[in-house]
Image 1: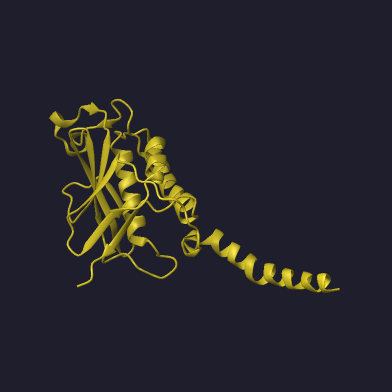
Image 2: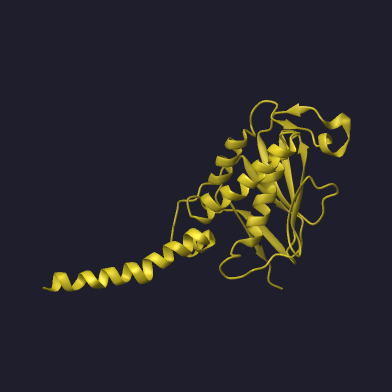
Length: 213
């Protein structure tokens, strides 16, 4: 008898708790960041971070997603990266080369942004890159003052903007010349972050924090 009494309780839990939570996660992937999902962190020496912005710190947490995306973009292939002069007009700096390391730099200014991500009322981030030997320095400006920090929908908002802009910059570093194809690919990068990071499949690769005064 007790066995049958537990069935309605299970149905109530599924209908009123589990199902709404599942719908919320599907409609707002950011909610998944609150779930107790723990994964073993992995940090590759192919990546590093730098910070030139006072009051904030940036650190690598897990580079598994970076490995996934750089493989998807084929960033470390021979002659994969074009010199930044391809975009800045400095023709002497346009040769292609192979890179072996990527530094993700949080900076407060870029002269000629090649990657821009913006939402009203202002810009979320801008990015460019420079080549230092076999290292690609992926430089990103985060609009800390224009990005919200709502507890659910904007959790990891700084990291999301930085990562999206940084990946867009890597995409452009391949030497993009087809605007129609680039629009589709850049939208794909945004969707990939929602699908693979906010869902919990990958750990956030980096963390940005504000230093206490």
